[in-house]
Length: 343
Image (tube, rainbow, N blue to C red; front, side):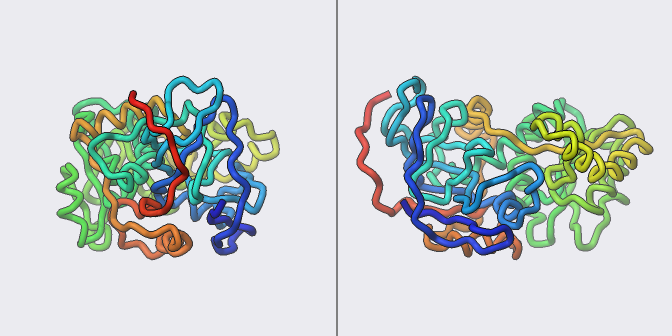
């Protein structure tokens, strides 16, 4: 089976022959038709998240998939051959930049009926991130004020739409060329990050979703009301995350040190900081599917790459300029034969 792998941290992605996926009793074998490209792919390749994402190299890359079910484990009850599905595989089972992948049944959902396979492939990781930040952690309520950074990006473009559906007033940051675009997504307050300082324009916000980290995260704490919350997806990881993923005591101390500065800044301001590393969830994807098919959330695909261009697609993450997501398509590639069944 052909796939794109990384053989050394910070090394390039390259195409290679890899073994066929092992399909467990509760796994579903998916013929990959589309795979979203995420910032996480670059963080894995560079080793930036190696403290808690430890892969045995060479590792097949890719964290989003949309495709067709071509095999099911003996205990699978929710999917049949021929189903069109999408998923963010569990963090320990990534590898969607390949011809096929085995995904746990619990992580899969049927794709929205109203979108293309490339649009479906763009959604899982960013939509689950937005859902877990705004619904699960943030518990955003009607009338609250939410700041979403990088509103034209993969997470931001979905988070704006979701926050508006939850009844929030949404502010976002974007470049000059994307200001009208993020307004179309539903943003109420739009800030050109090159010419305006959001700290001078915003105050009293209930929640900030930060995808940039560093100084931007530190500044974000200052626009929160007392008791407000900043949720960061770019890091640094915090002690609660270290406990959740079962890190050993030494790593927990290291993680605590990494986030000590930002947590102390938050404490002095009377606000909180939390790190979010999203998790796979077929149940949440089914709720997202309903929002997409209901016209509440629309995927944003800025560019589609052919499978042969996978390495180029990941490299494009550092160049910017793509609205929403870049997606790798295998739509026109030969697929394994599948017996289609009616649902």
